[in-house]
Image (tube, rainbow, N blue to C red; front, side, top):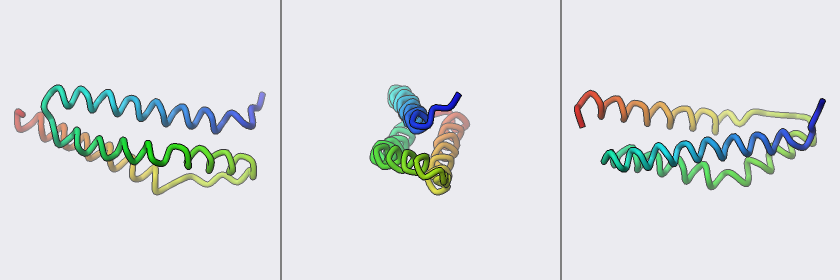
Length: 97
């Protein structure tokens, strides 16, 4: 059972859930007083929010043309940001902050 137009919608909803989860983590980090994580995560959240509409349009166009190309830079940037946030959290735990 195919849903040719809904794949882009599901992808967009997944990115929105990712952004929402990031915002929840930022609020918790802010309550804990970890300002570096809040700052770094805030930049990442703004970048995700700024690209959201463009990413949806690109995904829809790729599906319509049936030539999907992964956004490798966006995937690598998000992965690097998550790793950096995890590293900041680990350093915070180890230093006892």
